[in-house]
Image (cartoon, rainbow over all chains, first blue to last red; front, side, top):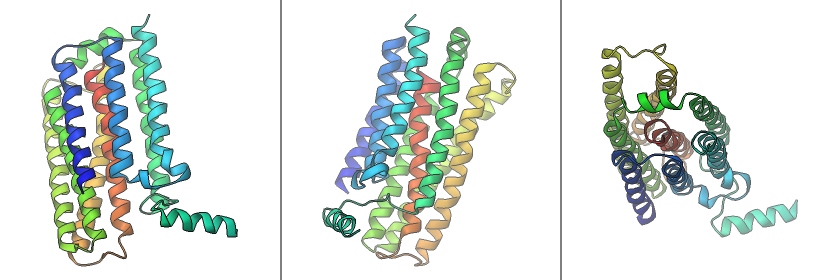
Length: 85
Length: 200
């Protein structure tokens, strides 16, 4: 259970980082995309380690990854339209 | 057919499964749920593009400390559920049940914190009709809130059944299914938290 424990600690650290971005007033396109990127990494860790998809082959191996990339494309493009001018 | 069987056997030997843990039907349901949330997130982001100032102004009224606490609570719950699955795989029924009850406790804590947040907003007179930001904030978070309630009920049923010895190291598909559903609830919040509370 060492892997899930390390992932858990990493997820907590990344969550504190995301909160810190807001706490220290960082905003704009760069900060938003950074925070979105961190969310995707967290999501991938949850899919791989907690949902145990890293031990699955084929379509299901990448189901969560595809969902996260879809979110990144949709949300990222909306923020780029807004903040990127 | 023989070739496919040989590949499957090879995969099994390498510890690679063809299907995700738990009931496949539940995974199809999970994909459907994730699709609905993706539509919600996209709708939020593209609507925000037309009302940037409004969204940024009212986003600042949200309690980010509560959101941080709730994110840590959900991650902890997911970790506890993962430990419960690990324990039942080793045949440790009682330990698995204890991990599940601990996860139920975390789910309750999430609901308490979020409920407190809602109470504060309602006291301030915030409603769905107040403005577009609050409409999205309340709808999105409440939709997720309902999923936490459902996930918690599933975990309670699993904790009780595990404690009564319904599962063992050979048969624990229900626990894997319930765990996968719970992790989906956690996964969705990992996007919801930065999108609604942080990104501007």
